[in-house]
Length: 256
Image (cartoon, rainbow, N blue to C red; front, top):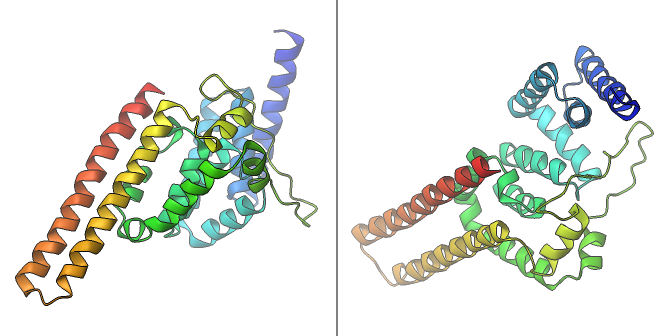
């Protein structure tokens, strides 16, 4: 084992031990998850993977853990790909599918997403009804320069002395550094899989506009039967889009 490998192994074990100590004290929250992720970056092990699963299960089961996680993640490191995937998950579980979808867009790669959560977001009635928020976000991302985009996602400094933002993501995204990849997304130079993700958002916008058009027609005095047909049409459109997204997301997930 080289000196560098030994140093990484020691650091990985340190992060893993910190997470164990947090769990032992009942702090099964996003901070413990960050420590485990740091450990796995250096020394992947079955023990660490089990700990991460334990933490993630806790985040999804307990409302107070979700709220703590949202607060911690919103305070800093929003421009980290890994952290944003976690933020999207807790936002979705907290009943915020629109915010979850926006964070998935910021993560920058469809293949980094959880297919089950992602398909659930697109199938969500709340997400379809609030697509104007997503349209606004996408338009803003296109208009931003790289500098504006990174300024918009810059972590805030916390007053908590025990709070420490997670380290900068160093892995490459589509052959580029995360910083360059995010900048390219802001400049509409995103990779193919992100463009596909963008097209899904546009597709839902089309569904929403069609729904509004049908509702306007319905206000002119439709029969109950026509209203039922309209409702069924919207549900079928949403279900069809969800199935297509689920299939494509799982495909990219497997490829990734």
